Length: 294
Image 1 (cartoon, rainbow, N blue to C red):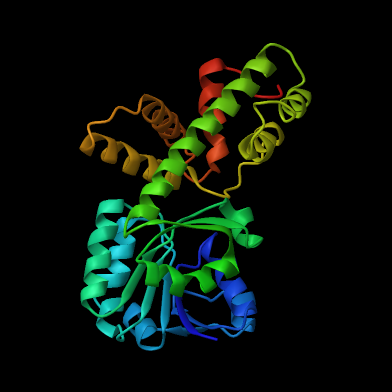
Image 2 (image 1 turned 180 degrees about the vertical axis):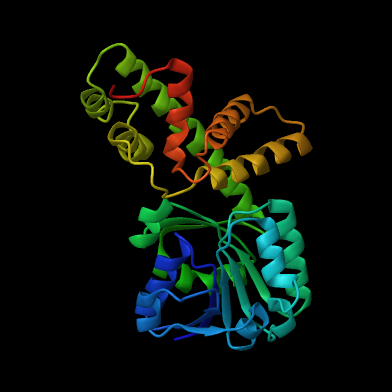
C-alpha cells in the first residue's frame, strides 16, 4: 500500500479519495477548512501545504479546477516541487490545458519525479461508483506505475500517448459532451413546445439511434428540473475555452463548440454558473419562452 498525497477534495475528488482509502492506501491532504467527516474517519490526515504533502508521500494526485490551480499547487509558494522526493509519481487528474501540461511534466521530470496527466470523464456519478473514464498522457513507465491507482477510481483507462495527450483527449471529450447536451436540450424543447409528452419522447429516443448516456442522465435532469451540479456550467465553460483557444492555435474552426459556449455564457449571465451543465436547456428555454415539460 502507498502513501498518497491527494490535493483537491471537491465533488469529484472526495469520492475518489474515499475509494483509495478503502483500497488500503494511506492518504494525506492540504488542510482547507474542516475535513470531510467520512474521509477523516477512514484515516485521511492533513498537513499545512502542498510541499508538506510531497514530503509525506510517494504518490501525489491533484484534482483541482483549472490550469492556474495546478500550477499553484505544483510550483507556487510551498508547492509540491519544493518537497518532491526522487522518483515520486505525480498524477494530475484535473482538466487543464494540454500545452501547459507538457511544461508541467517537463519541470516535474527535471526535478526527479514522474508526471502523468490523467483527466477523467463520468461526472459525480462516475466518481462515486469508481467507474470513471480516464485518459492518460504519460511515458510507458509512468502509465504502468499509475495504472494500479487509476484502476481503483476508474473503469475505462486508456494510455493515449505522451505528456499532454490525456488532456487533449479530455478537451475532445468535452466538445462532444457539450454538443450532445445541447442536442438533447433542443430535441426535448422542440417536443415539449409541440405538445408531446417529453418523458415518453425521451423513452422512445432511448431505444433508437439517438440513445446516449447524456440523453439518459441529462435528459432526465432536464425533465425533472434537477440542476444540482454533478459537473458545473462554469467548469464546462472553462473546458470549452481550452478547446477554442486550441482551435485558434491549430487554425481550426469549431462552430458548434463556439455556439455551446455562448449558451453556457447565457446560463452564467442568469446566475447559473453553478448549475449542472444540463442547465444549458435553461438558456434555450429563455429563447423559446417555454420550459421543457411545461
